[in-house]
Length: 146
Image 1 (cartoon, rainbow, N blue to C red):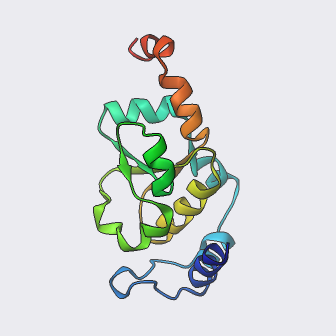
Image 2: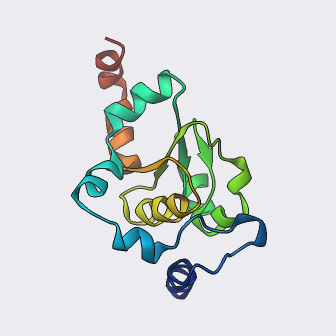
Image 3: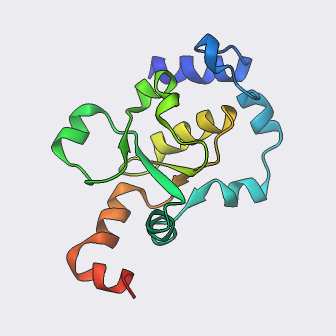
């Protein structure tokens, strides 16, 4: 909890966590500019994500902790735990939509806001990895291929 608060405080002040990755704007500026359009545009559903993944226009970033990832994997996308994200920005493709995901959406929304301040085209997975897994389960896969 303290780490999350520290991250939010650093983002809100605009202090770079790493010298080579200074924010394009602060979390404070993001919040000041936040409106209904941004609220709509900051998230994506699993069906739209799957379409963009097939078209190679997006990358899924699983931000769960290592223990969670070890217990259950999606089998695709990048795994960058939230607490490693500031150090691993260079692994993300800036030419694609980055979609952050966790089982629900709490950490993925935090990761989305952080990446937004770093200039990424980013959304969080609205229905989480659990929703994506439900969509991709065996009896639903046929519907997606149509």
